[in-house]
Picture 1: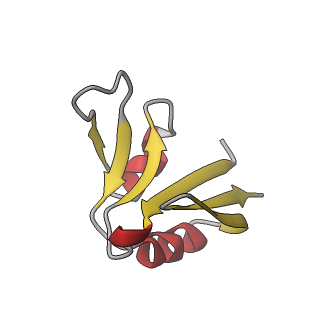
Picture 2: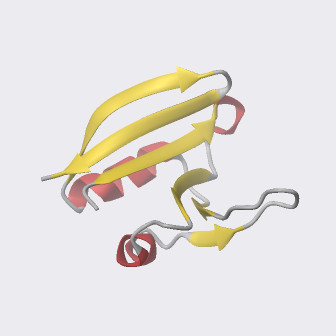
Length: 84
């Protein structure tokens, strides 16, 4: 899967960072040292890392990913990355 979305809440710029969902690449999630969590009331799981987005973006760059776009959606910051 060459595309990855990561996000964080604006008030949480120091982490945690959401790095995937239940369908994400398990190898990549292991490389990012992400933990799978299901929030009470949600019927889906997400992978989190307890570090700021900047650290996660640096890790993804070392793995060959490049930022394609970034946006703010309400109180959430979202980055889209792609690996050639």
